[in-house]
Image 1 (cartoon, rainbow, N blue to C red):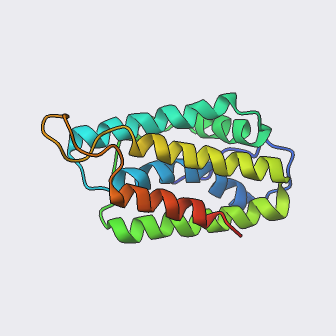
Image 2 (cartoon, helix red, strand yellow):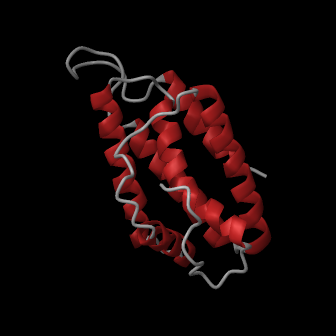
Amino acid sequence: MSNRPATRQRTGLPFRREEWDLLVRLPGRVVVAATSAEPDTSRRTVSEGLAGIDAIAAGRASGSRLVRDVVAAIYDERDEDTPAAEEFRDRVAGIAEVLESCRAAAGALADRAGREDADAYRHWLESIAARVCQAARTGGVFGVGGQLISPNERKFLTDLGAAFDR
């Protein structure tokens, strides 16, 4: 997603501007981290990126108003130049930054949102990451065989969940 400030906060929860921006930017960063967890071919990375976009959009049907409002803010940004898939150049540093952002988001959610909204946001991010990691098999030949989720992807999913544990 773009580097410009996120759209106006939609939710009635009392988030500071930087907290709201973090919550809006984080789903896209989780997609990039999940695609970066395992080095893949360009084709697999695009499949993962598209799965991430679809998983973000699925938040529109969430029972949590917070998640629905974050999705609406993401789509309000209208950044037509956003690629369908990308990976971090420095995978280790990029993933570490996303996990640190998840810890910051967990803190903001614990301070300002109810347990249901905080849990819904966390589970939504975890489902985004899982769909990305499951979008393309790793290894195999011509898409046959290989692993649905590689050890690196499994570690990322575990680390993502742990980042929200307080």
